[in-house]
Amino acid sequence: MNWGSASEFFAMGGYGLYVWGSYGITAALIGAELWLAQRRRQRALREALAAASAGAQP
Amino acid sequence: MSSQRLRLFTFAAPSRFYSLSGSLLPWLWAAAALLAAIGLYLGFFVAPTDAQQGESYRIIFIHVPAAWMSMVIYLAMAAWAAIGWVFNARMASMLARALAPSGMVFTLIALATGSFWGKPAWGTWWVWDARLTSELILLFLYVGYIALVEAIDDVRRADHAGALLAIVGAVNVPVIYFSVRWWNTLHQGATITMSAAPKMQSTMLIAMLLLTFAFWAYAFAVVFVRARAIVLEREQDAEWVRGLASAARRAA
Image (cartoon, rainbow over all chains, first blue to last red; front, top):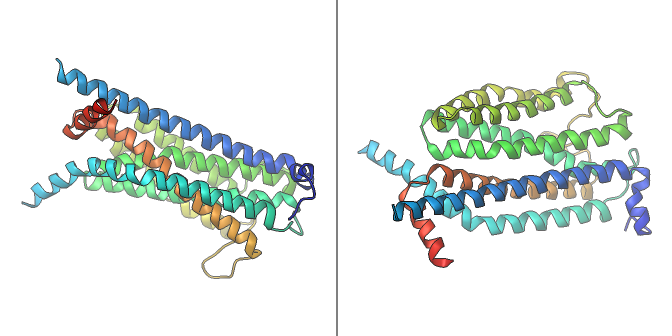
C-alpha cells in the first residue's frame, strides 16, 4: 500500500494537479465520446423506426 | 457467378455486422471496465513511487496506452478506408468513419496527459519537438478527415475522398513512432520495444498493459456503437432494417 491516508492519496506527493488533471481530462473525454456515440445510435434507431412505419402506412 | 457472390457478400455485410457487434458489445463493455479497474488498482495502490519522477509518473498508465491507440486506430482507419475504396465494400468505409472520432479522442488524451506530465518533468506544458509536433499533426489529420467526409453530401464520394486523405496521412504514423530516435527530442525514448526488455518495473508494466487492453476493449465497443449508428443511417431503406424496426415496435 502506497498511501497512509486519503489526503496523501489525493496529494500524489505534490503532483496532485498533474496526475488528477490527466485522469480527469481522460474521464471527461471518454464520457463525452460515449454519450455522443450512444445518442447518435439512439437517434438513428428512432429515425429508422419512423421511416419504417411511414413506409408501412403511406 | 463471382459477381453475384460479391454482391451478395457486400449486401449481407452490414446486417451481419449489426447483429454480430450487438452481441459482442456487453462483453466488450465488461472487459473494458474490469481491465481498467484492475489496472488502476495496480497502478495506484501496488506500483511503487518512481525514484526519479515521484508520483507524477502515474500518468504513464493512461498516457502511453492512449498514444498507442491514437496511432493504431489511425492505421486501422486508413486500412478500412482503403479497402472500402478499392473493393467498394460499404461496411469497410463505414468502419473507417466510425474509427475517426475515437482516434481523435485518444490523440487528445495523449496530448493532454503528455502536457500534464511535461509540466512537472520538463518545466513546460508544450515544446515544438518532433514527437509532440507529429502527434499534433495526427490530431489535425483526424479533424481533417472528419471535416472532409462530413462536408461532402454524396456518401460514396465522401468515403473515397476521406480514404485518399487517410492513406496519404498514414505516412505520419511511422514519423511519430520513430521521432524519438530520428531526432533529438525532449520526449523520452520508447519504454517498450520489440527488441529489448522493457525499461520498467514489472508492476508498472502490468498496470500499463492492463490499461492498454482496457482501452482496446473500450475502443472496439464505442466504435461498434458508432458503426451501428452509421449502418442504420445509411441502410434505412433496407429490408433488414425495416424488419428490425418492426421487431422493435412489437417489443415496445
